[in-house]
Image (cartoon, rainbow, N blue to C red; front, side):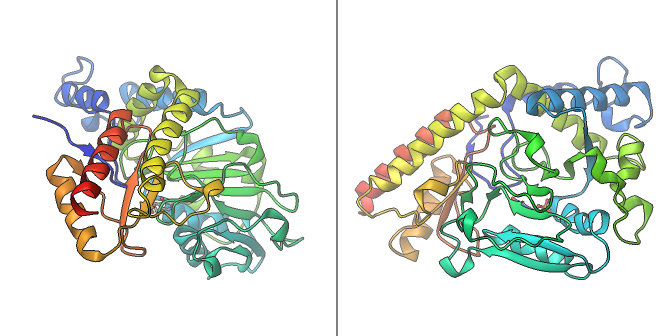
Length: 361
Ligand SMILES: *Cc1c(COP(=O)(O)O)cnc(C)c1O
């Protein structure tokens, strides 16, 4: 069996070592005679797995003690809705900076509850750049300011944390969490679905400054209340134990590999290779994002026409390079280069791109 290089945007490639360990432990975890997925979440075995994953993710991301770290069922979109329910009063103003598709979905989830103010919008420029910080119109009475750290579809990312003083900064880190060192203390809240950079789909992490959990928010069910999840160590109800376990293995692997500083180095090198191949192709391949905000995680790129695009998708797949078709919202091609994608995969893609251009350019 050979594993292909998988450039999927999410659910995405996992470290081979993690899959092998999960396979080895599938029928009998740690000699208990059952799989970890078959054990109670309240038993000593799973409690240890959960606590280890939390401690390791805290270490990996240097999460300060005054931040709660929650593991929650479901995806990032659910968290987008919970932000308004937990942290803004009914009809209160919230500021959103929209730099791509996911910034728009974030707004869609809170519209029924709050007064959304779009403080800056990259859409008129086709989401090819991030509006400069000094052009944002932030509100004095906002409950929070929301950004998307990395836009998975449009391929733009914040290279630095923007300074905002009017309200706590909330950020969707679904596709770039743990990809480089980050000063968590600059944020009120960070959330991410795990299936891009942290593990399997079905679980999300929320990192939130504890004092924010005291906000009244909106009338809502207990199960939608972050403070309740925090008070019960994310075991308010049955958590997604399998996903939590796999996330834990993935985080442990990242620590063993050298942590976020090492991944920042690898990710920069992978992205430089692919952008280099695009920019050095004499216009055969195009990426239209302003160089200063080009994503190192997701690279959308385009060929001169649709026929070539379809051929590229088919031939790259045959060559063992999976999932390079672009998202339907923008078309073209897209390479996702998450932490678990090995550097050799980026090299193989670049070699394929050069060969494809030789044959079709
Ligand atoms: C994938 C993604 C989402 C949506 O995640 P779901 O888990 O499908 O809800 C939201 N934001 C960003 C930045 C993403 O990459």
